[in-house]
Length: 449
Image (cartoon, rainbow, N blue to C red; front, side):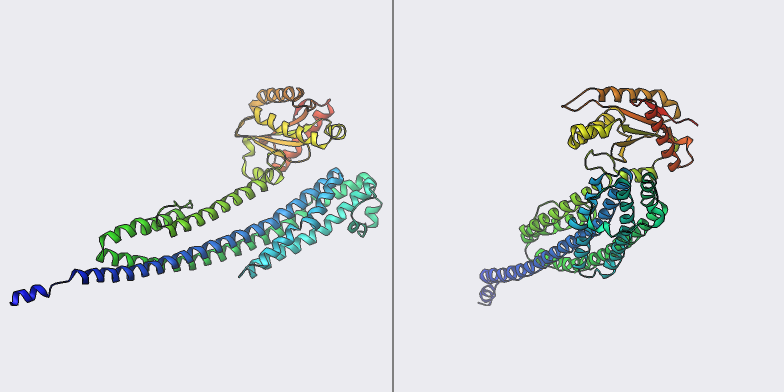
């Protein structure tokens, strides 16, 4: 009788079932809460990262706009072509990229220090424009232009500058936008820009540290739920590990390695991975675009002036040939065939240069129709090789293609081992190129003392 009573008091399957259901509901509720918190944190991190990307992009756009204005005013003061003046004022008063950068920064939270530095850079850029206006007015006076922006009419030249002959006014204008004082002001703008970016980087670091701390706390809750699942139901542990923990851990490692997150695991995590991957892809594309655009010529794909300056600071002049190409009679091509044809001629020239030089060599566009090739890792004994390359380039350009006129180039060549510094290297290469021009064009000249 007693044995039967003990057997009757045994654990009921219904009770076990109910307990399992209650446990599953509790664990599911905990899991839902923890994944919801984790999803919210990831969304917050994504939004913060997007804001940081936008702020840094805005900061760099101000410098890009300042450099663009510098390029246009320098080209106008050297060449006197009104298209560069028009482009300058279109950027300064129509595109308003600098003002947009300030507005974007102003809309961010916690950006006061970075905004202050960016505003200083903006003020420096505006101050530099006064100098540029004066230089442009000199060019206008020298060239006798009568139609130009109203803003420049208020610029008054000094008596000494007003008395200069046109050639001296052009020279004075070019000096004002190329001398040490001009670049000193540009350097101040860059320093403030760098300070602004440093502030943004510090803000991003602190924000990420806070988000990471929050994520660690939420991950602790997830692990606790997993422990309960392991103790209660082995299958739930296996399922949760497969759909939740492993993808999260893998995602953390991928984030540390700066790579996309695999879209695996639970639906919530797949959503987070897709969101992160989209943000990651946009960020990478934006970064690559900015880097490429900042250092390459939009028309030809060659390095631009900024890229040229960067290369000058990184190459070894003692093992490098500087080769300066200038298209013969390029102005007449623009005048007779139109600027669109002139642009296509420049594009074709770069293609011909690429086909005749190594992939390790660097091609830079430093002016309207002036290109420099850095032939790196080269000795002075390669003069014959360079001569044959230039002769082949002129042969290629002499053949009309795709309706483009036949052209030729005059070339100056100088090995960096014979130059005192990079400035001396360029000046001597430029001198050699003009010697080739004087010798009838369609030829080349090595610099000689």
